[in-house]
Length: 414
Ligand code: GLN
Image 1 (cartoon, rainbow, N blue to C red):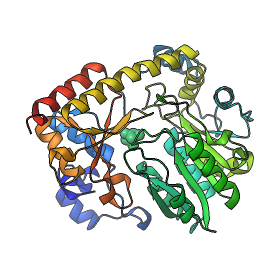
Image 2: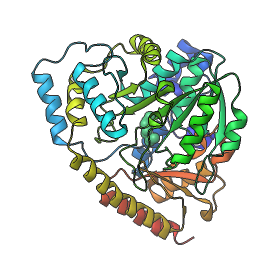
Image 3: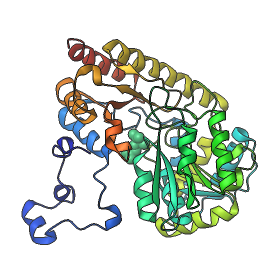
Image 4: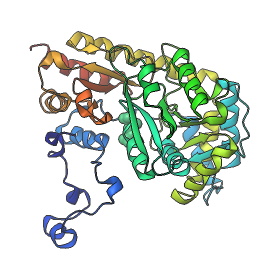
C-alpha cells in the first residue's frame, strides 16, 4: 500500500492507544510476529476512517448504510429474552446448522448432514481462517486469483502456506485456464475461489468452474470456495463448485449472513464440507473462537429460512442501486467494467490523469468527497491494480446519487 494514504491515518502506535512518549518507552519498535509483519492496517479500516475525517461519502468499505430486516432483528431480541445467552455448541446451535443444510439443499441439490458437515463460525472471515489453519500445512501451496480479498493472504501466511497467484484481467476478468494449469504442482493443496468475486463483481461461469474442477480432481487438490455474495447474483445464476460431479468431497463452501441480510456486524458465517475436511476446520475453530454468539445464531436460523420473496426483493433493490451507480460512473467518464454479482463495481480511473489508484483515491476523498477502494492492495504485485478502483453500491439511493453528483461536479470539468 503506498505511503500517501497510510500517512493520513493513525500510526500503529496511535492505533494501539499509545502516546508518542509511551510508545518509545514501552515498545521501542512495534512487535509483531513475522507471519504478520508485512500486513498493514486493512484498506477498509483506512478508508472508512478517512471518510469520517474528510466528511466524504463512503463508497469504499462494503457495509450497507441501511438496516437489516426487522424479522431478523426481532428474532435476535427474542432469543436474548428467552435466555439463549450462554455458550453455544462449538460448531453451531443445532437449529442454525439445520437451517444452513436446508438452504444448501435448496440452492445446490446437495444433501449434507448438519451435524457432521457444517461448522458455524464468527463470520466468513473466521471460516476462511479456520479452513486455512485446520487444513493447510506449512509449505503447502495454495492458489489465489488476484485481485483477492485481503484476509486470504494474511490467513494463508498464518498457516505457513506458499501462495501462488493467477491474475484475472479486465475487461472481463475471465480465468486464464492455461496460466492456472501452469501453477498447479505436486505441492498444490488447494485453490481458493470467490464467486461472485470481490472486488471485480465477476461470476465464475460453468465452463470456468468445470475447468477448475477437472484440474482439482486430476491433481487431488482441494477447493476453498468463498460464496458470501451468492445471493447478489445479477447477470447469471450462481453455481456452487461443490455441486459439480466429484467436487463435494474436495470442497469447503464458505458463506455468511452479513451481505444477504444487511447485517455485516453480526459476524455469523459457516463452512460446509465433508466430514473428513470438517474435522480440521472444527479443530481450528475450537481454539480460535470456540463458539459464536448464541442469540445471533438463533436469529440467523430465522433469517436463512426467509421466504423466496425476501431474496427476490433483495436482488431487485440491489439491481436498482447498481444501475444508479454504474450509469453515474459512466456519465462521469470512468471506464466501468461489468459487474455480474456482489455489491461492487470496478472502474478504470486513468481518464482522470492520476498516477495510480492510491493517488486517485486520495484525490477523490480530499477534493471530491467520495471514498473508493484502491485495488492494488488486492494483488501480490500492486502494479497490476494501479489503474483500478472499486466502488460499492450497498448504500441507499440518495447516497449513491449524491456521490455521483459530487463526482460529476469535480471530475467532469477535467
Ligand atoms: N468485505 C468488505 C469489503 O470488501 C470489508 C470487510 C472488512 O472491512 N474487513 O468491503
